[in-house]
Image (cartoon, rainbow, N blue to C red; front, side, top):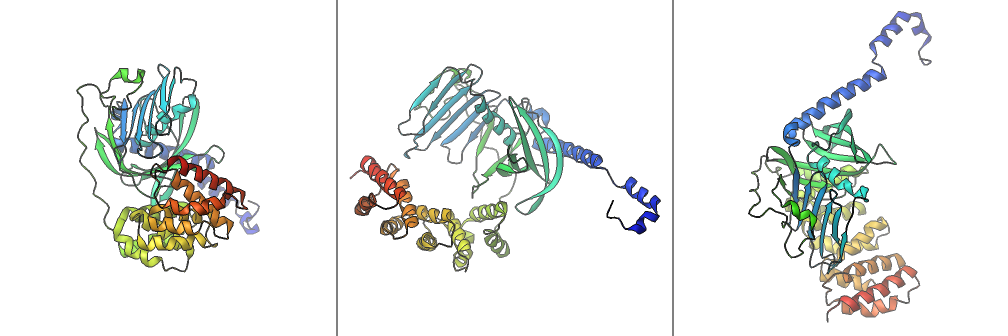
Length: 450
């Protein structure tokens, strides 16, 4: 009010009218809360309705490759199977039964190391896994009842959406979650989890699209996470038949990821798609996404990368041309996309050594360029030649890449050509390089099959 001109004070009735017409902060908050509740009900209806959602008793999530399966029996039983063999991480299997306290897990090692617990109920924090799956895929269940807080407008990948903030109490924890809803379908396109120390920022997000009907409930069949550059294509099953005794015993590591099924039961056929695949990108869209790869807004750059990778080989010619850009950052990010589309793209592979040696790039990106050279024999040969580079940072990048290479179950025979340089690096002036060279040589001694 202090900033009003003196002339305005001569017409106090006008000021009174303005005060009466302007909504109070309280009214604005009330309107936002009312809109949030309205949008939440629209989202629940779009998912299939509260009645169907509250009838869900379990959920099966099968990864795109079929080698990773997670089975949640709400509210307190969980089974996970992830087979990464022949990698060093091997087979990871875990069971959590908070009703009885029984727990079983294997380490990420090959062969796996087994741990059996008699009472896991003391590990209260681990129950968050039951919260996240219900929130991400169902929004609401008989056990999970989010409370709408406010509604605002936002954008996801450049498209306007409704953002509904909700609060959820789950056991001893309280979560604040942002649910981004498509303006037309009212289905979630993104779910974000607000951080504790930075309450207005998301520490994790999951993107979703291509919804299909699973037993009357709409679930996304394409997912991507915050830093992920591609879309995964999971399969879901709702209310699967299972043996209730399964969660009370040690699983069979040779019986596969569906050993919990009730005898005689089978998985239902995959539902038919209810949405069409996205149309091919136009030249203008491709050009826009390429430029957005270097956007200072992380959400924009990650979304652009994801869309280009999803588009596949149709964008390769434009990306290859963009490798001629004057911006080294753009060239690097274009090369990353090319390699995600084609893991040994010749043009991108040829550019990686230059990125590793270019001081204009961020150090993390130079390190990633070194890791990228591990994709084929030619790249490994280049790394071998750079082991004794005069720049200690380059030597660090290369030795970390060799550390990754020699942790693999199958180490290529080319490693023999690197042995003289690796031995010399055990006397390097840089302490990090010295220690890593010794570790790499030890791993070669343990894992390399001559």
